[in-house]
Image 1 (cartoon, helix red, strand yellow):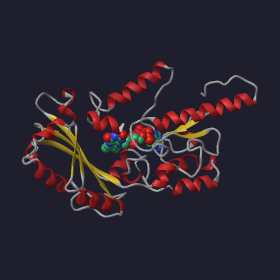
Image 2: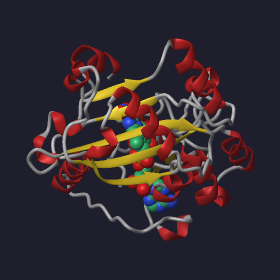
Image 3: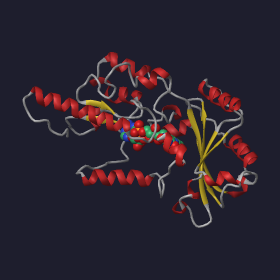
Image 4: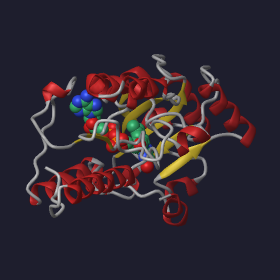
Length: 286
Ligand SMILES: Cc1cc2nc3c(=O)[nH]c(=O)nc-3n(C[C@H](O)[C@H](O)[C@H](O)COP(=O)(O)OP(=O)(O)OC[C@H]3O[C@@H](n4cnc5c(N)ncnc54)[C@H](O)[C@@H]3O)c2cc1C
């Protein structure tokens, strides 16, 4: 995925990311599945009876939802999983394209805005150690430049995020826009509407983003190799009916979908083994 980003530019979904979720839901529908949204699952009792459950949640949520059905040692290990920094995000409706000083920036869907390496490294180190960076490193996405379906003709959308300490509830709009103005003088004049989301707001929006961490947990060497706990079967849990398939499993955060793919393989292997033990043909898990 990173190679694609560097070779051809960071890809975005035509029509907005919702279009990708809609396509996946349609595909599931074609296969006989259905999706129910708008209902928070707080415990196993909120779910219908099933042979297998795959949870697309953080380890801390898995501990809350399934704690009583899992071994206490495993639950304690889930709770020890460490969070990454949070993000502060701004969504924009703009009257025109961002007036970058360097017009080359108008050729990229995603622009990383930072100073010299030392400044970027210092800003990221600040966020990771619980401090607000004076000059945060910004990730600016201007997807409407390449996808006119996202905004009325001549107008544009954009969003920006930067790392902040986990759980931070500070609105950084002023700080972020001051930096954007330096690189794109007149940017503020193009803003028709803005929406700010603090790291805590991000968690309210999606409880998986604990403290605003959008990567499913800290990317330390240990947590990259062993997510969510130390072990060789990261998707399985001590309960043979319960699996984890979120970004808190290998290979970690991102929209690559590989966590779900590996989790599904893990479920199929378990069902195959169970069927073989019972002398039956392996069947698809319900
Ligand atoms: C602003 C932003 C920018 C990003 N940019 C990129 C990028 O450029 N490239 C990239 O690869 N990745 C990016 N990511 C990260 C990527 O989106 C995540 O790593 C990925 O979506 C995690 O997938 P997931 O399936 O683990 O969880 P999610 O995508 O969070 O899906 C979990 C779903 O379960 C729901 N849910 C959670 N808890 C419950 C509950 N208790 N009951 C019911 N439903 C629940 C949530 O609402 C959500 O719909 C970005 C994320 C954000 C927020």
